[in-house]
Length: 457
Ligand code: GLY
Ligand code: MN
Ligand code: MN
Image (cartoon, rainbow, N blue to C red; front, side, top):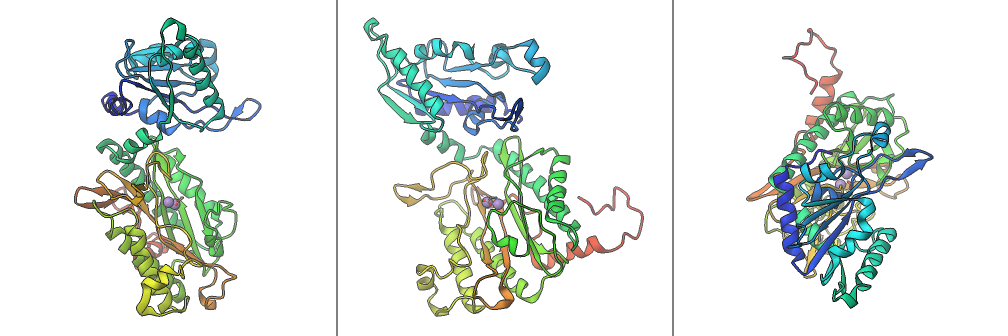
């Protein structure tokens, strides 16, 4: 994970310190390495709150923000330098690097946590930390609190409030800076290029796993080694399983395939879904449902602008989908009274998830969806997904032609000052555009390929 500029990281910490206030202190642990078996670990992924605050890439670290503390506002505890361990496991920044490269005012080794944390907590009223996230860390905080209390006779006061750090940090993480938006734009472009390559490669006889491999490879080639989540590649009725990740079935002629995949770049997620025909041509019933989902997605994206509430895109999608489902005979009801059909959730058997979520360092990113119990208004700098779908189970009593069809179309959308920017716009989603792209890929290559007329992107 590439660290952000020192200036940006400092600006983030300053904003957090303002919210913590001189009576407060914030403690944020890094992620821990998790053992898979014996001496093999799961791939390490830094805790997003910790990464956002510090840019420090190593496990086993703890950051403390103590506004106006005599030893400085930002203290970082980390692993010491250790030539023997570094020979085996790679470079460590050590306390020197914590100060010189990551801007800590003071740095200690992890071994000094129990001695120094009570000093940092002394005479503060409240501790902000990721409350009840990791029972082991909860216990550490309680022990440090006890240690401060033990000094009461020497005139030290101990904090009396434990407060979740989520409110402070997540309010900031929700609004992306220009640098963050740019990283997310680059992540979405890489995923878009990978989706295009995968669409061109799809054909009957390949397996879901092979499409997944094409996606992973195309992302890695472009500098994104990690995925934001496990790719979903569902051919035919597998697309009706919302979180299908087996990806081990064959792709069959006449079926659609749903691909929900997005890389992570420098700690930021992309999250894109496209659904297209394995053979390169939609059948009539597939096209009817596809065009309906696309129309719903376009209506939902049009509702993304500052001042619109969070649920405006969802409501826009529901209006289009519900009306379309009546017209196609999948739900019974009065086409003239769509609001009542929506109230009765008639769409639910075919559309059972919401139309999107916040996107950022985490794929289902942090940030409150409601303020004062009402859906919050969208603001410039927020990034959300817009992902309506329709899933007609093979066991459904819908008209037979539609059974076993699952479709989702998902884009990543940045709220701008005057509307929105679709970060993932580089993957085609119009049915005819998809067919054209897939047909082009099937034409035998005529002339020699030069860098100037290469179609591969
Ligand atoms: N890929 C997970 C989601 O779309 O929410
Ligand atoms: Mn997705
Ligand atoms: Mn999503």
